[in-house]
Length: 96
Image (tube, rainbow, N blue to C red):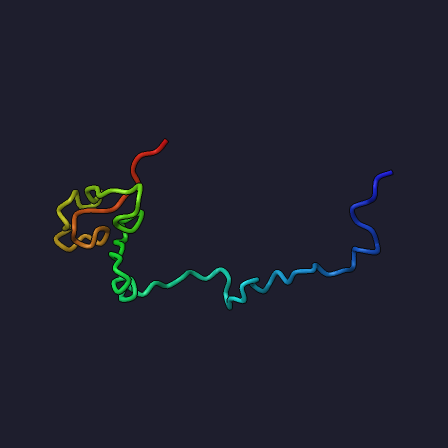
């Protein structure tokens, strides 16, 4: 004989975990992490440009020509916002 999934005995009980509270105790478990660029520079890591897929030097990545400015570093007479004027972006390479 199969046991029913829901009985009057367990229907009124609350879940054992509070799903509104983060397990790690974070105030907002869905919040993004803000990275301080000065801390990144102090750690010896290069900051990412908006068009980068990964931090420069990350294994499995390489430099490519910025797709928005074609490598000139300029777009519409101003610094390209995608590569921040470098004309290069870091992208994932390979695959398999």
